Structures are given as C-alpha cells and as structure tokens.
Image (cartoon, rainbow, N blue to C red; front, side):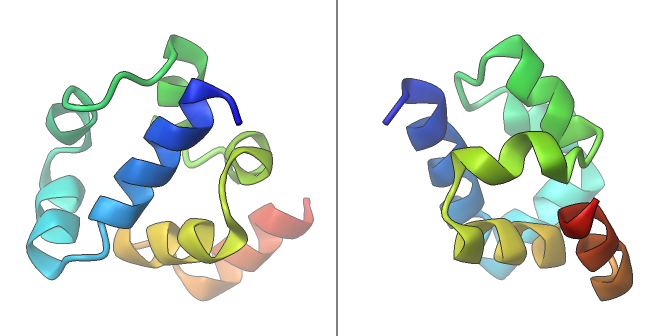
Length: 82
C-alpha cells in the first residue's frame, strides 16, 4: 500500500465523526492541511474526483467520505460509474 493510500484512508476514516465531517464541509482546505497528501491526491479530493481517488481507498471509506462531504447519492453513483 502506498503512503498516500494510508493517509487518504486515514482522512476518510477520521471524517466518520459528525464534528469532523461538519468541520470538513465548512473548510476542506484547513482539514486537508492536517494530512500529508500528495498534491495530485489533494487536488482530486478537493475536486471530488471520485475516479482518481476510488482505486486508492477501501470502497466503504470512499462511500462514507462522499456522504460526509455532502455529495448527493445520485452524484456519487454517477461519479463512481463514470
């Protein structure tokens, strides 16, 4: 597993708490500053580029991340299929 995989998974895992998810929705960049993500992965997260980040994390964490970030279900499904 690449380091980015672990860091990205840790971010998504941490966002399972309601306060952390709320903080993330309020200021994504500030929360991401706490995680040593590679620049291209950080950009993909900020852009909700599911196609780029999906291969790097557990699908359950990705699904929860999309919910925690406020992404509607239909949009998540469209992005994961695209």
